[in-house]
Length: 351
Ligand code: 5GP
Ligand code: MN
Image (cartoon, rainbow, N blue to C red; front, side):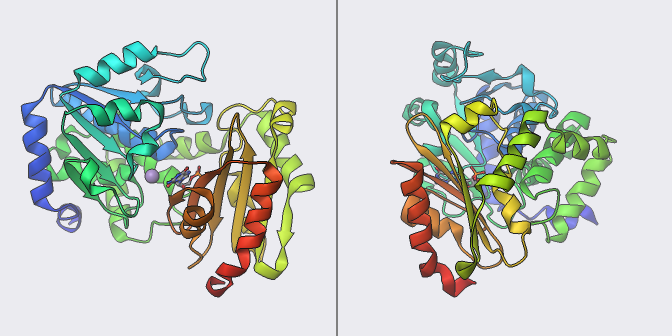
């Protein structure tokens, strides 16, 4: 019952094309997007675990360190991380580059354009080794990859990794660890199965994963655990930083470098903050501007038909999904915020 409904998710011709590559090559490098989130980590770890079970010499290289909040995902500590901002880096640039250069084949999850690979992206894309993409973002850049498995309707790239394994005929290789990794990715990308998860297949896959007997309740608890400094920063944002533009059903806030320092902000600490204003009744769109070393990082969220991916594309050199997008801004926090407020009227038709 379960398999019949889900085993046709991916075009079987693409599965066969990927199978040819995976059968042929031994050294396989798995990559995902920079600033990896739960789905990036879950999909890449599940993929590398699966490839190892098939006897491959496979590694994941993270282009930067996954946040401490994702440490509950099993296996994360054993993979390569090349993070130029992490002192000391887990792996040196040389080590990461060596692994990339020795790769005979790449599997890339949870991104649609090479620029999302981050710092190492240019080395990956310079490699002649074939590249398999497994992703759920809109508009993948088809020409950059050799096999493009793209399903924007999927809840998570992790969900697609399960479909991939199933359609490869390897369902039996899904063990407790792989099941936990896939579930973690689906759980995080759907806000614990709140959004992007109405397709019955999502729960059929969850039902299959639960056969591996992992502790689902514990994963949900681990996901929301946070250090005290994050709780306090959240309070600061809600109390002192949040701006509401009622006329356009919008909310936004920013955090400067000084503010982040004051709260001893560590990577991942403010992840998800941008969702908070959407809980205010009448608010349809939310923006978070975070001052980083040389740029302003922009995170956007919305409800319903409101296309924040268009807003990100048009104003912040970014993109993403209709209800979750992001980008970057060169300038001051104030300028980034002003641009948002100025852009709002254009999107009133989606309210
Ligand atoms: P977040 O707000 O969590 O950083 O990103 C949400 C989503 O927006 C990501 O999953 C990704 O699809 C998209 N996104 C975030 N930042 C960027 C960016 O700089 N460029 C592009 N193209 N997409 C981004
Ligand atoms: Mn994802």
